[in-house]
Length: 182
Image 1 (cartoon, rainbow, N blue to C red):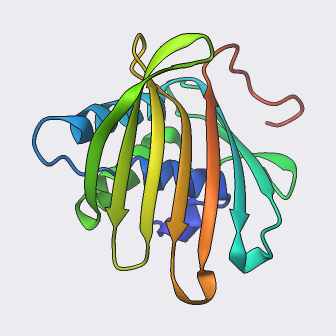
Image 2 (image 1 turned 90 degrees about the vertical axis):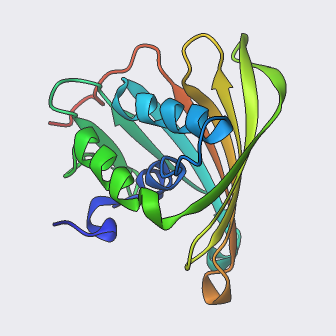
């Protein structure tokens, strides 16, 4: 079995795992968000992420993940600014999320309705804690497609790891493999 670190070579993939690991505590917001992230995990999508971490002097770091949404679960990642094919498929990532599901405690709540990329969205707040960190996420889920569109995540890992902020944006249109990568 691959470990979390082995299947998460970029911060984008790590966050893709983290925000998709919402346990279901009955009906309501957490179920809606779990469904949205599960749907996004297998849909063709281009995920853009910017991370600012105290442990790295608050210098922004960007990364991207492309999930082709094909039968093989083909994904591509930026690693040190270069596109590479992911050693892990989208399906393996989904399975890792399912295994991590029981580790987190989450509280989810509806915040408001909003507009993202010209379409109606519902905004939720998620508070998660586990033995390693606390995460507060604001996520915009499209009302029509039921897919996450945007997320702002504040992470407090404590100690030397400190605090970080992540901004994520999903694009579901014209998703293609990066040119020149096999």
